[in-house]
Length: 277
Image 1 (cartoon, rainbow, N blue to C red):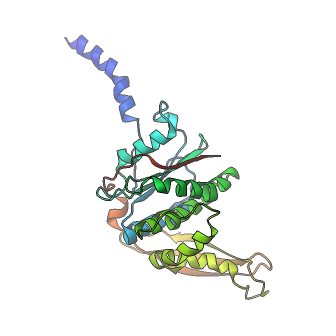
Image 2: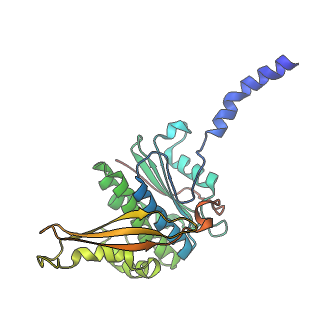
Image 3: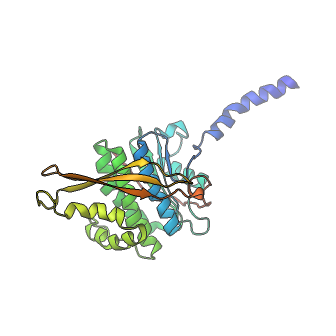
C-alpha cells in the first residue's frame, strides 16, 4: 500500500507542478518587474504613479513584465494568458471591475493592456491606440523602460481618467486633440508635477532664450517607506546651450495598503488590446 501510494504521488507530481506554475505570484499590487526591464529609480517612479492613481481614483492598475509566457503556460494564447493572470490575481475592485493590467513579455516581443470587465468592449480600440502610440515605438528601439513609463502615463490619461469621469472613449485618430482635452482633468487629479515636466519643454531657456529646448528628468535620491518620506531630484537641461539646474522635491510616504495587501478581487472578461514589436 505504501509503494502504491508513493507511485500515485509521483504520477501526480507533474500535474501539481503545472498547476503551481500556471501563473506567477505577485509581490506587489503595483509593479512586478520579473523580466528586470526597470532600474530601481524607474521602478520607484512607476510605483509612485500607480499608488497615486489608486489613492485618488480607486483604480488598481498593475504592471507586470515576464521573460516568456511559455515558462508558465505555453498552450494558450497571450490574450488568454493575460486574462487568466488578471483574474488569478483579482486586479481591480470586485464590484466595479475597473482594474487595468499592463503585461510585457520581453523575449516573446509581445505586450497587452488588459482591462477589467467594467470597461466594456468600446474601450478596446482606445487601448490599441495607446499601445501603438506609446508602447511599440519605444520598444522597437529597445527603450523598454521609457516605453513602459510613457504607456502607463498614456493609459491613465487616455483610458482611466475619462472612464472614471463617465466619458465615452475618444475618437480613434492620432490622439493629439484628445491628449490636449484630457490634460486638464489629469493634472487636477494627479497634481502639477507630471504636467509641469511636459509643459517645461515648451518654455524658454533662461540662459540662451531658445524656446522648446528644455527637457526635464527626475531621479529618486531616497526611496519613500511606510514610515518616512523620500526625496527626489528634478533636473532641467537645455538641449541647445547646455544650461542645467537642479531642485529637489518630497516623495510621499507609501501607503501600507497599496503594496503589501492583495488586490480587490476584480475580474476581466478579456477586454483590452495586444501588440508585438
